[in-house]
Every structure is written in structure tokens, then in C-alpha cells.
Image (cartoon, rainbow, N blue to C red; front, side, top):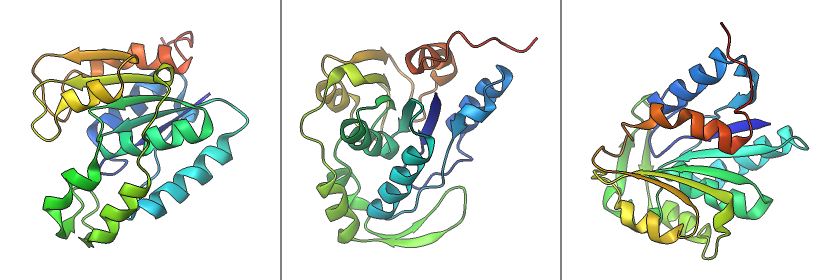
Length: 195
């Protein structure tokens, strides 16, 4: 079993949640089960990289953990490859929500600068997944998310296992409390903890 973590828009493998999850797995002797690729800003390039990463870890089981925009990618990939996915405050319509950010962008972790264009929006539009199998998903959202409306995710993933936490924000402040649930969902819960 491998967990592939998909970071969000203008984020990177150095993000807080990626680091917390990686550390939690490492404490349990599972550091080799965690992968978090640096996703290119172009959606098509990000998806191509993730397709290669999934293929690299097959035939072993793969669980995707996607945060924000990473949750959008995880949904597309979960349906395409019959995978399970944990979605953390996921983007449901980035082609709409990120339109207001068209123009110069600055990655918060790497310092990379690039221009967000309508081509990005078109690529996200082409990745839209209309129908989902709710049994594939664990949805983690906080109602205080000021970036994305958590209710859209609750509706999109109706029937999936959902944890809706009052308050919080887009960073999912309650994330550390959900780590045991994430490992259980991924099939890694029985792994021994290092003493």
C-alpha cells in the first residue's frame, strides 16, 4: 500500500499537511509508503506526472490523499483507476473558483512564478468528473473554509464517508486528529508504532 499525497494550488510537498502525514507515517515505520510529488502548475502536466506515479506503484494498492486542488485531481484519478481517495477541503470547480486569480502567480513554497491563464481553466474543465462512486472517498472538510464552500464538496460526495468539522479553515486545522482515520481508510491502520 502506498499513499500518494496531492498538494493544492500554489503549494508543494513542503506544505504543513504533507509534512504532518509524512511524519506520522515515519513514526510508524511506514515512511516508504508515502509519496508527495511536486505538481506542475499546468493541470495536464500535473495529471501526467500523477499517472506515472500511480503506475510506478502498481500492482500494490494506492490510496490518494488530495488537498484542495489536489482533491480535484484525486477525484479524476480515483475514478479513472479504481482507487480510494481521501479528500481534504477539495476543490469541486477550480475552473470557476480560480478564474479570479488569472495573471501572475507565486508558489508559496518554491518561489516559482508563472502566469495563470484561461488555458489552465480549460484544462481543469476537461478533467471534470461528473459521476463518482461515493464508496471510493473519505471527505474531510471544515465549515470555516473561507476559500472554498465546504457545502459544494458535501453535495458532490454525497453518500461518501464524510467528516464535517465546525469552524476551522481551508488549512483544515483539525487535520492531525484525522490521521488515524486516514491510515485506517488506506488500509495501514494495523501497522505497528515505533516505541
